[in-house]
Structures are given as C-alpha cells and as structure tokens.
Length: 79
Image (cartoon, rainbow, N blue to C red; front, side, top):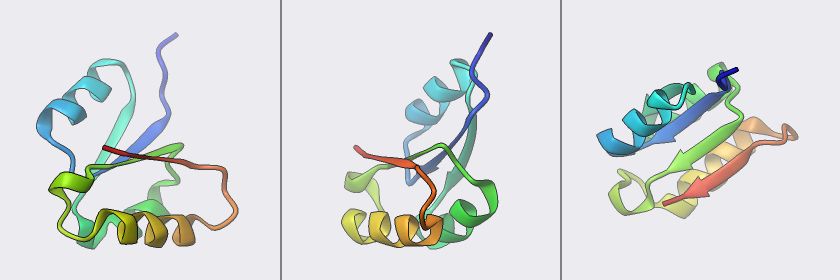
C-alpha cells in the first residue's frame, strides 16, 4: 500500500513537492508566513523546511513550527 501520511513542505521547490506527491504522500505546501497555521491545522507526520529558499530564517521557522505542534512526535527535515 502507498503511504498516505501528510507532509508539510515549507518554501520547497516544485521538484521536492512533486517527488513526495509521486510517492503517494499527501503534501501540504506553505510559505513561511502560513506554515505555522498549516502545521496546526494539518497535523503532519513530517515537516520539510527548505532553509535555503525560506522566506523566514529556517531555524526560526523550525522552532515556531515545533512549538505549534507541541508534544506531537513530528520529525522536521531541513534542506
């Protein structure tokens, strides 16, 4: 069976988003400004932050998203 977990991608390139979608993941794309709200509403299993293309500082974005997710066990991957 294909994976169906939700992955939140922040400031990611089209190729990253397409690759994850092609592999069966539900991808929710967000810019830095909307990422915190999307993290709260979508309950992702993984958050991918494109730190080199980020509209906000990548490390700051990670801290904000992780604070929003609280105690949930969510991995954050910075590219």
